[in-house]
Image (tube, rainbow, N blue to C red):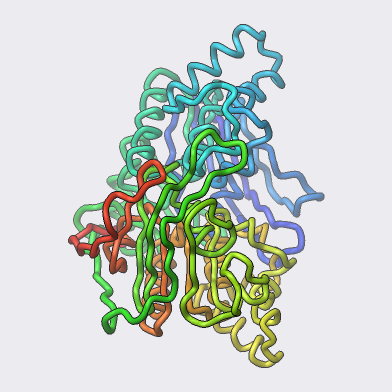
Length: 491
């Protein structure tokens, strides 16, 4: 067999960073191999995939050492699909890469329709990309790569933002595509169980450089399971891998309502139907409400309304735990940041500073805390969320999991009464996932009200006190008490 990927002593350091994202990597991937790339959060998985796609250039973007070669056409799907969308309409987005390759027009549109069908996107070709949910954007990105017919698929957590049905649809699409083609696959995922049937080899990157383990899945997890667990790698269900989920119950019954939404609805400008219709929500002190539903059901829109980042088209949202004497939707930014902490679906949309430490200091400074208090709070959050070594790093150069932890930390930095969190555990290894769960449980026990939009069933099983399920912009019944099933966690 011939190699399609070759790395010899390869390393990459992002511009302005002291630490190398990847270093001393020796790796050979043969044509037709299906490789699952694992490692702790920040081990360099996304950096390697971006480099394989040819999107890193030294010295403008950073420092490079060693050699890295890809022999074939790559197709890349990133963690953040919105960062890759460049066109305003669904059909044009899939056609964009084909046009750059000079594919004939009649062939372009046949491939576009086939790719959209394969990933289950039934929108018209003229449907605006800005009207897609996060999960739909991810499927669109996969369709764009599929249409290119790449020699090597580079997939960076392609199902992380999808509901369970959408995730399985994407995996089924990948199974079909890989069965019909001799393409090579390099797949990054944290939760390995659902994707093991897609791969024949597992490569685990070591934090700090090199390869920690490499081999066939069954043999690798059996031989290196304890070491991988210590490194924070999620293990598949099975002997030595799965543990029952630990239910972290609230320390006391919930308190008074902190926020109430009554009959709230919202329609985006130019949309042909409302994103949300007549939803009632109450967030109580000392309680975690999980908001669930399929992609496009209105979860993220509801989160923005509850955080006063959108004004309802109908109904009302009222903050009931103090604050300025004016309608909630009209609060000034300084007033809002004092009372409400928000984690966006895309963490990059909330970064405003040039370093991690400076990002964490923005909120506390804005609410008027003194310098010593700001410094202490920043240091505490850096330590708690395993970001201390990245304090001077630019937030935009972090891994996906690191960006998510930073966005959670910024939401906590002003000690708000209400936390609205959109996919707070996205991109986490087993160790940082457990730390986030413990941190959110602490917030609840200190009387905060938490609303978590999530597809993470393990998070719901571990923490949720109540659940609200949305479908097509409407609530399915009243919010109900969360069950605590014995969910298997790969720890």
